[in-house]
Length: 97
Image (cartoon, rainbow, N blue to C red):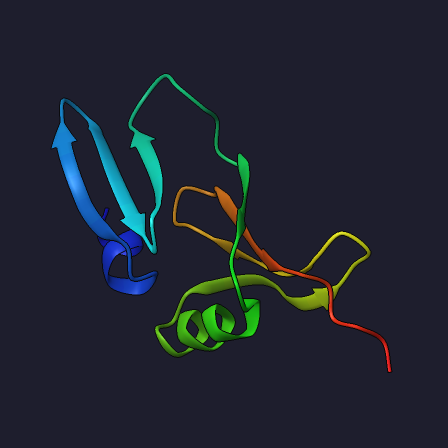
């Protein structure tokens, strides 16, 4: 909870019985303690500009798993939470000059 709110800039939507919903820029993630999901789960989140999020997350001390890279499907980077879950943050691929 603390990591998503303080480090990644999400807002708490609600919290109940070991589950929370956090959101940022109209995108919500529900996080549940315990039996649902395994450490190492990956989630892809599309954004307008991945570089903006990379700069913010880096400045806030987020654990960057991989720096921004251009792929055919997106320009993206990966950030890991304290439980080993990975958020892949991506925007449109950058054109090659």
